[in-house]
Image (cartoon, rainbow, N blue to C red; front, top):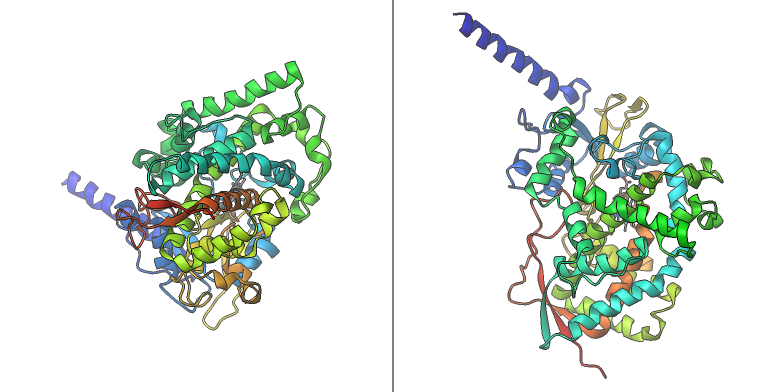
Length: 520
Ligand code: HEM
């Protein structure tokens, strides 16, 4: 009898608890779709039936004429903002209320991740953003062009030397190797050739670190985000000691060399270390674009950086490059292969500019190349959504009939649905069609800038945008000067996206052909 009463009481308490959790948005008078208790909106993602970007798109599409909609990631409530105007208000105008990202990885368990820009909060973030922004100024990027070209040339030579007119390649694999070679040299000053050396350590570490395709890592990430106490209790680190030690030791080793040999540094880590030693080569110019950065600009800011701060930041540059750039290169290759008329037009532009590949401004300003990349990032934004953590209470004032004020409290989370906005016919006619003309000089001005957010929005937007664009542009200029990208028998048309990854990437593999061009 006592047992039955206890069971009934437990079920009742659980029911009340679930009711409390899953009426969070209802109590704030925010609409939601149908939500499954315990799993929220994430059930199909956890079962591997739909991808994370598809899940967000489904929630976004539940209702057409509302500015926001409530959602639950397991038990965690998030407010998905559908309206570009509201995104602008929250992430730009009222940015001080939404300063941070939602904590993603437990700081005590992953020291390498804890100090990087995207995890830092409040004033620590402001100071670090100011310290790290000069890594990618115009003149720094210009100085990176020769090394980027070398990586692209050796990439192309590697495939030219392969037998046959059409070389079949797994895009995910080859582009992650191109990025490893180029970026390891630019960030750490370390030369790698991970195409020739297939078991290259740098490439291995990059793959392990970005391994959200890996089921174990995915579960650990979920625990870090949604049940941080459990992750802490079991001491579950996301990246693990091997990766932490590898990237921290490189920085320590470089520091030692710098102190002993006082050699002039040209890579990003070297420049940061030099700046900390007082030679301050990084402080020579500032990025004009960020009001927040300018507010906290301080002459001696680099001197406060520890080895871990620098290792952590360099690691996020490497990690961000590995995943985002290689996936954009893969998606663009696919679109070129299945849209030969677009590819021919791009090849024409590249052929007409072949003497300018060492000219930074010419590379960055090739108009059609820029249009094709912009459209790739529209249709296939590697980061399908970004978030903000409410750091100061905020009220969304009603503007549409039926809306009521929504009071957000510290600790609430908002979601900016990048992928869903990019595929909304309201902003992009026939959104599934790959059409670079959307970004022509005449048409570009019709695009709502807050409905095109591949690099995020406001003062917290991507720091590496121009660095990424440089890598992508140089890669395609070199590849298309020698090859045409073609579909082969193994190519999946339409392309399949990964259901395991939290970012937007192609499925297991994306096979295409590199067809050697006949040189005239
Ligand atoms: C195609 C390539 C890339 C895409 C699509 C991309 C996209 C993004 C997005 C959507 C965000 C979140 C912005 C927000 O919340 O508003 C972000 C943040 C960030 N990205 Fe990228 N990214 C790319 C490449 C890179 C590269 C190559 C680097 C570094 C070398 C980098 C460094 C960062 C950093 C440090 C942040 C955090 C900024 C902060 O919180 O202040 N990204 N990126």
